[in-house]
Length: 266
Image (cartoon, rainbow, N blue to C red):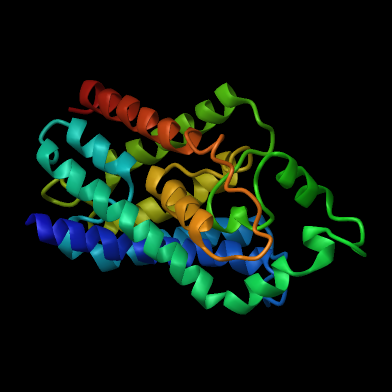
């Protein structure tokens, strides 16, 4: 794979991942969406299908890492990718995540406006009592639609939040390294894409509740940057005080999982 193939494949694939994954979060969250309040099952399966679609689109070009944690693990893995390719993967993944988040905003433009101008949601003169969750999110420095773009903890305990992301990422990376790789060992294969998508659903159902299961630094950081830049009314903060957790946790989990794979499976 050339550097241009890697960059293009990761950009397109990660954009598809965030478009469909962020899209299901928007559908469940925003006013005037037919899927509003569909719940956690809709989100977890939506993200699983997003992974499946993105992998199958980008695998022929870049191997469909779509996640800096996967890229790091494949660089640490014996006979994995070249370290010189890692920055190219990272750049494509971050750019793709930002593009995907912007596309979610475009697709749900009217719903974002309706949601963020509703006094019952954002508060203001004449507002009814805001929901407990909205009040709590604003107190934590997160705006009322930040969850469409990036993750946040239900209980903010830094070490536990990092540990949750580490544990979830270890599960993901071990599944990728043992079952998901293509014949060249440098990305996801056809069957591996399906397996990985199902694993992501399982992680969401079992381990996703405490932090929203980023398990992917680009998936969280790219859309968080877009949230900070977009001209959304009453959008609130982007919660940069938490932003390091879904970056450090998955990268640490990936390194642990790749090291364990090299010791136990090679």
